[in-house]
Amino acid sequence: MTLCKRELQSKAVELQAALKDQNVDILFNDDSFRDYLVKFTINTRGIFLGSLLLYYSPTKNAYSLKKQIKNPEIGSLIDLAWNRLSGCEIYPAKTGIYEAFVDGSYIAGVIGYGAVIYLGTEIKTEISGTIPENQFRQFGGELKSVIETLKWCHTNSVKKIRINYDYQGIEKFATGKWKAKNILSIEYIDFICKAKTEIEWKHIKGHTGNIGNDRADSLAKKAAIVNRTKNM
Image (cartoon, rainbow, N blue to C red; front, side, top):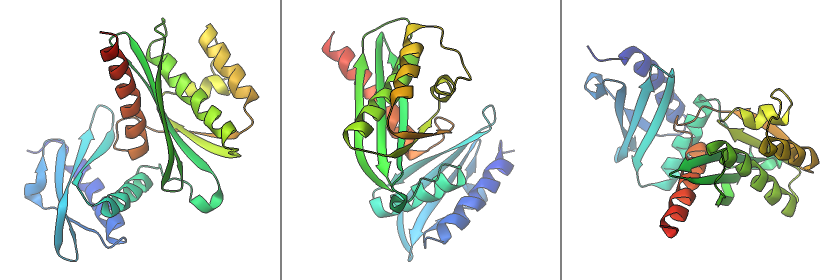
């Protein structure tokens, strides 16, 4: 018996229908399923364009999607459909509302942060770096990613941005739901209060195949790894 086939089949049908509206056909059958996984072939106008892998984690009750394609146009259509199904659809560019995906990382004593900022489907900038080691570890990178995002917004006269995050403290410290108990969170709250850009917060599940979240995670990890290598 294939584990989690029912859950995978339900989500597979949803994704197939969403992509058919974009004239992208993804095909699967009973042989496409493995434990916690279903594999699609991608076709458009009868041309094979690559594969998709849809995973399901029963412990997290979460899905993730991995692309094995080289066509960027088809990749963008898949990302849009998947984000819509995952509740992570971004604002259209015509609204003037920017989107930021932020993340932090802690690797072998180095704290990294990363952010990717969109207007519609266009990436406007990517931000990454490291901060000095302290007792806050990944927590420090998470908050720093937001601070650097808002600095960029101020420099570029951005009026409103939605910040998409997976660490809940990013919003809960900012809104007062969590009380600041250390200097880092106190400084973070002070920075948020002084920001001139209007902020909308949105929590998303990490590691579910959201392209923006995955990119921010990759930037944070890369920054930490590069810094660590330089100091070895």
